[in-house]
Image 1 (cartoon, one colour):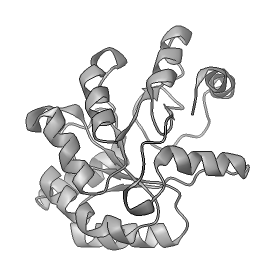
Image 2 (image 1 turned 180 degrees about the vertical axis):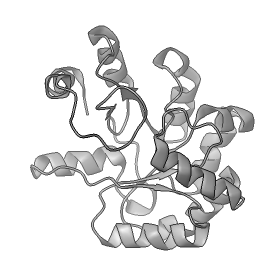
Image 3 (image 1 turned 60 degrees about the horizontal axis):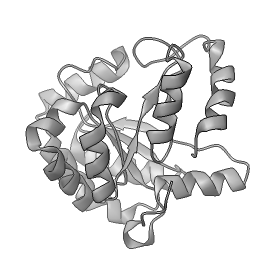
Image 4 (image 1 turned 30 degrees about the horizontal axis):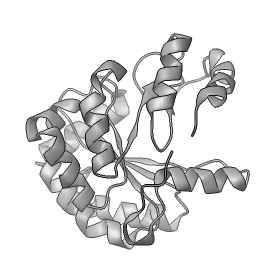
Amino acid sequence: MANRGAAAGKLTVAETFSNLREQGKSAFIPFITAGDPDLATTSKALKILNSCGSDVIEVGVPYSDPLADGPVIQASATRALKKGTTLDSVIEMLKGVTPELSCPIVLFTYYNPILKRGVGNFMSFIKQAGIHGLVVPDLPLEETALLRSEAIMHNIELVLLTTPTTPTDRMKGIAQASEGFLYLVSAVGVTGARSNVNLRVEHLLREIKKVSKL
């Protein structure tokens, strides 16, 4: 990925991964649902995660129909929504805390809130909050053209997803289009704890490394 620059000298997601790769290290990327139990606590948690050595932090925007999320994150999102957490309030919280963080933030949100605001407006909105990356789990590769072009214009790294059942040619297209890092879903179905990992994952990792620039 070309270096598109980082706000206030902060490394981009891609630069973070590049540095870790040079050091032979793996990335520590915790996930937190914004607004559970409240946004003030989320802000404090982000600072703690940052001080504990997080390389990237993924922040989930609570959504009423989180099809890709497992029961733990669904329950967390439900609690946050009951507290009145909205996309706007999450972004305002992040705008206040990102200047205090040394690691980049990747926002996890479904496509409907983006579409409702307008893709260009959304990208400008999150860029102003100091967000570096974006994960949209319910948008297939074929429908990402507008999102990708606006992400490039606003210096947002759009992270795409692939799975163990994704055909090889399609996986290559996803790997080549993804920015920052490639999100390999290790199992079919929703997110959550697993007792084992799909046997194809190790093979997929090798194949992805052959075709990915990340």
